[in-house]
Image 1: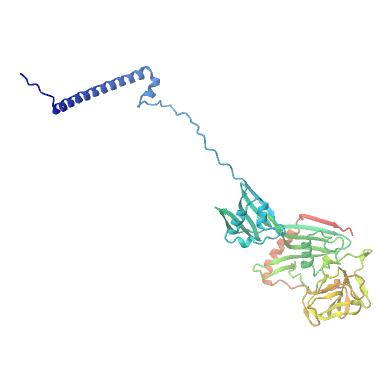
Image 2 (image 1 turned 45 degrees about the vertical axis):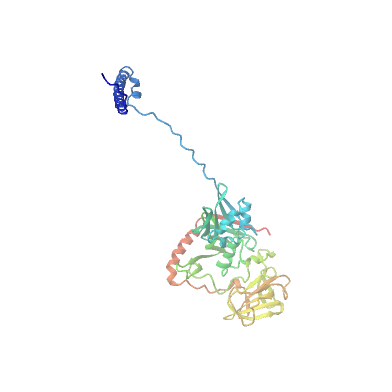
Length: 452
């Protein structure tokens, strides 16, 4: 008879392990069946439904000519372009930088930032009426400022983060040659009106180039002709002004005068010279008064009454407003300065070699004009008036030889100093180029008819 025993802990463990082992073998068998069924399903699909093979097979091969379809990708939208505007502002009297920024609708913060840029405050403190400032705006905000500091130098302020960077930029000056010609068609040249040149250029032509050859106040005649070759200055394409005459020709009463400006490579020589290589400057000016100040007077037929006769004296009269400067025609010593009979207030200069000049009917004398005082050519002696026997304001001028007055327009004056021989080859090359340019067709021609 078998003894009945109770299940022990060890027994449970034993049988529990056995059940788990049997369950594990069942799972493995089930997995094998599933794999077998899956392989069979694949073969079935591949044989009967080939168009589904790419979707169920992990190792399916694509056809050799298969290409992936094109896929269009939308690019991200480009940022809008920066709107750039340059505003040129012409400074008016009493303008300040702050007022200009306010006028342009820019804030005071930009003013503080501009002035804070290193080296900018001193260059922006004082503005000159008539000068041009260029403001660069990006999307209506100040991005930069440009101001000319002088010929060839520009202050450029550019936004840099929250502030501005200041740079002084060297901008080369470009010069362009321009030729202008004209014909005098007037009863008499006076004040530059008859030759159609800008006032500054007419002054240069008559006061610096041909003042020793032609009396522009009284000696210019109808039919006289001129040509000038002058330079214009440009910076970044912007016209800055005229650089002056470099070559000129004037035909006065049938006589042709020509001159060119020559500057030596070392800068030692800079002036106007005749085509023979002599300085245009000579011992005596043809007229001791600014031609532009001379007032037209009535004429008698074709000949003007330019010779004024006093008892025992002959000379030239230059009608001009009271106070017009009277200058020494040449270097000399003051022999007399004071009241001189019918001549009124007068100055007499002794130039040596028996030559003297007389300046009469003055309203007053320059402070330095005293007896025995040396004066230089062009120095102011006094001012036009109508003292003495004069009936209207004018200068009475005499050129005397051995105490006798002669017509100064007919006096033979020694030529100017020749250019040094060391510079002559360079001068000759420059002369050839300038004369060739002067003879080319003029860019403009002026014919002026005076109405008075």
